[in-house]
Amino acid sequence: MNLSVPELLFAFKGRIGRGSFAVVFVGQLIFNLVYSALFMPKLTALGLAAPTGAPPSLDALRTSLSASLLMMAIGVVSLWISLAIQAKRLHDFGWSGWWQGAPAAVGLGCGVACGLLTVAGFKAAGVLLALLGVAAAGLGGLGLLGIMLFRKGDPGENAFDGEEPDERPRPQEAAASVRVEARETAAPAAQAVARAAAPKRVGVADEILLMTYRPPQDRRATFGRRTAA
Image (tube, rainbow, N blue to C red):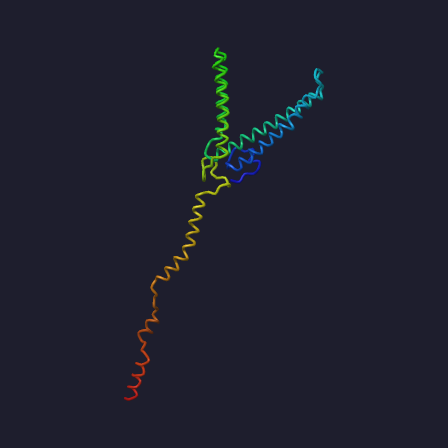
């Protein structure tokens, strides 16, 4: 299906193939790396512009608040784009977009269980469960990312969108097109063969001509008898 750039980045409806997902994913990864390495330290430094031990001035508070809001806005936009493209990629092979939250749900559940065990006095079990939860969430996230990057989507329509991404041809339409072309190519040849095999029909005028036709020698003999008589 045809998606505009805003729909590709921010919409949760529709489907995208592996190519579009990979392009957005790699672009977002590069942006986050550049942002973290170059801009975030500067924004953090602006937020800590007041001298150490000195009472913060109004300008320093404004600078710190502006830097914090900017970093928060960038983080929210980046998270939204990640959730949107993952939802559309999951839709491409018939999965609900909520499946992208499964690793986080596992980690959250293990964290809650860890807290309960710690409060109940089972600190060692709680720590072990927390480590298992982190490992399960990390491996689940990597596995889900691998599925989205390498798994083919459903051919044709599915329950989410009713259309297939333009990156792949529809097998049904391709097969129908091949059949139509084959019929169009075979029809003239079949008609020519049928015309060649059909018996030739003689018209009424031709039949009369054949019935009344006499060879030249018969006509000369008849003329000679009439002359002698």
